Length: 185
Image (cartoon, rainbow, N blue to C red):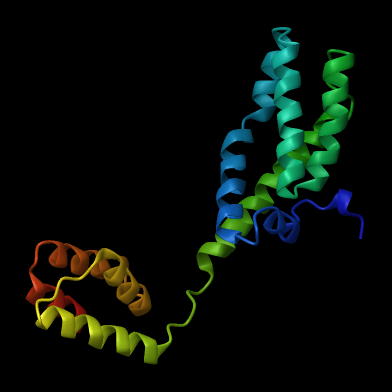
């Protein structure tokens, strides 16, 4: 497969980040935020003859896209970078470059949307039951619960964010009965 035409190579991007998909999504969303206005910025720099800024913008884009696995945009940015640096103009293929930028941003948005929709991993009910029993037993015995142990138990339970926060707040305030009530709902 010709990697140079790939809009978004998730496997490559994850390989750059030791397989951390969450970090990749974070970086891709940051990329989108940072480069969404690239066309306006680049056009402005060219109109005001700020060629060094225009070159720097495209050069940085080229590097970032190569590292994140956005290969089609990475390769397309080479012609824009060369034209800005050598001719101090945008190349004739600039509209296609911007169309590819928009396609890349749309692919990132779709990937991010899919990631949000992904189901949470199924909670191991035996592990969750054991964690709940251990946490309630510790609360009933008024034991000191370290933050790391509390996090371990709450992670195993996979509670909704508001319930988890309510349990954490009750434990912080040493109101163990309230924490137990939230756990038993």
